[in-house]
Image (tube, rainbow, N blue to C red; front, side, top):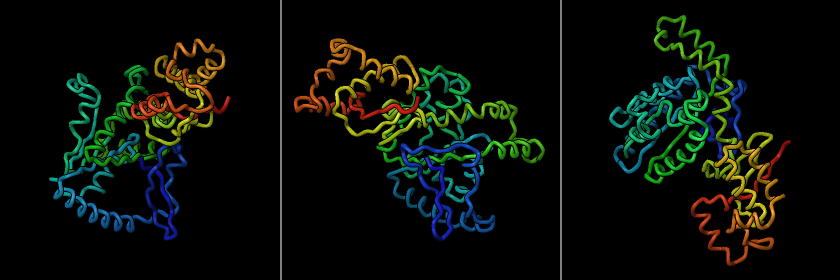
Length: 338
């Protein structure tokens, strides 16, 4: 995902990718334009130069036809997804580009798995595909509006990661952009849609209902960074669940007690659908209070490990766990906060 800006010594605004595991802010202040933002005329000139570069790259991409580019745009209503597509990609050759706007699923789409309609619109090699909204709606609005239970949308994080990993291995490069907007700015744009006859067509009564769930959507947007690493399949080195949550590292940890904590945590979070912080607290208590016989019965592969490190005889187990993303091969997770 790309949502932050950096300021170079030459006062040029540059988008900077958000590194996996780094937290992001979605408050109103984070939506303020950068101090070095050029005026409208200079911005138009810069966009035109970038369009020339995009056109050149597209021609090479189309001619080679050995890889594809998928651009995903996400954001709240009125954040500017349509205008971004028009201004940034308006000059590209239509033959080598495809724009897909994902609306409410049709009856046919509802009868398939949630990724079915998405996969159908993935660009073929040689083509730039632009998604206006995407499969992330299936872990966003379905959660906020409670269209599906938590036991369903939580599993989708891992499925989405597997899906995108497959696309990457098929030479589809994915670029994700979150277009952030403040609550005040959204209100201004909604009023414009009501008052400006040329923009009336953009207004939907449902926009106001969605706006009333602003905080719920903020929570849903951030849920990906509020869950421990292997639980949802994010290949990150570090994830943090807010100021009072879970910290995890993907470095291997040899202590048997830590492995037992994480294995039990996995059961509680995925099986009993507890929140990450509560699941970890209970897992720690279980490891503290359970007898050795109880630990051995529940997790024999871990309980047989002994000493302060992983013995040589267990290397095969570790290798298999690493290859299959097994929860036993998690790293040190520590609960911070009350």
